Length: 149
Image (tube, rainbow, N blue to C red; front, side):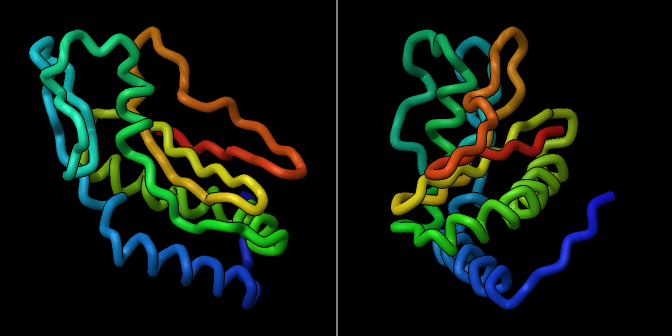
């Protein structure tokens, strides 16, 4: 098991992330919505869409697009680097919450960052015969991490 120690910079970035998540409440305010075909979607509580729309072809994308939160914007090089270290831990915390609130469901939780742009957290269920929303990758100006159950 990898030992994780926070330095003061990491703690400041985590604190900023927690403040945004707590102030918006978005990531922790989830509910089940069902469509007419019996699919149960775990979505944020204030959807900007209708689950009763005709057939949702890509359930993974539907959930992922409706469960994301822009946590931080205009990432500096330092924030970008620090977030890469702590993002898996933030994802694991959200995954633990989702698994506790929705036992029996399996989730993918992603954190993504683009240098000088946004740090975003999103999640979706693992749907049969569908691939995850993102490919995990890491580059000099963009990365995506995944934690899954």
